[in-house]
Amino acid sequence: MTHTPRRIVFATNNLHKLDEIRSIVGDNFEILSLKEIGCNEDIPETGSTLDENSLIKARYVRTHYGYDCFADDTGLEVEALSGAPGVRSARYAPGPGHDSQANMELLLRNMADKANRRARFRTVITLITDEGERQVEGVVEGTIARTPSGEGGFGYDPVFVPEGEQRSFAMMSAREKNAISHRGRAVEALLPLLNNL
Ligand code: IMP
Image (cartoon, rainbow, N blue to C red):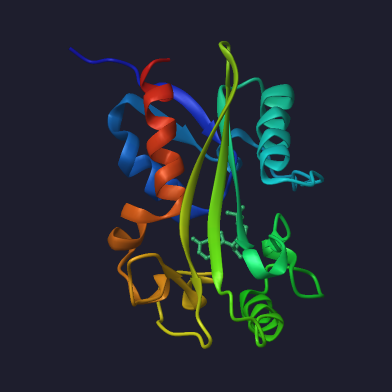
């Protein structure tokens, strides 16, 4: 017997994130990207917290396209910098944003005289369905290294060393990172909600 997978939009065009979630949820869901529903506009991320931004993105899709959907937002929160770069993680360094190298260099400069290296990655996912709006989060604690190391991953991975590890995220395989990462944990928290739809 065949069954039709339930369609749900993940408010992203990031292929890495789409692959990751598709491999986790399996055949019960057809995960659609923004492009696949014809949404080619940049959804404005005008919130001042991760929770707000993920809610804004999910509401945008729900309001304009009507699908069940979920959206994520992630930030690196550094204790000695009062939680910065946080919601501004993609746009930390001056310029058009999404320049990982510039963001990481600015972080290392701002951390040069800090003895407290504690930091955490936090991902918030907002799910919107007929049952309403729900949020889950995933956190990984760690420290900011003094110099970058490793070739894998993206963003701040070369300078983030998760708790209990000697290696940065950039030195781990995707599988090793996903098993303990903020996003991996947020997706784990999302799964029971999806499976109960
Ligand atoms: P987004 O909300 O997933 O787009 O993440 C915002 C920003 O946080 C990205 O542009 C990256 O700079 C950073 N970031 C998010 N996830 C990770 C990660 O897993 N490793 C390193 N940096 C990340």
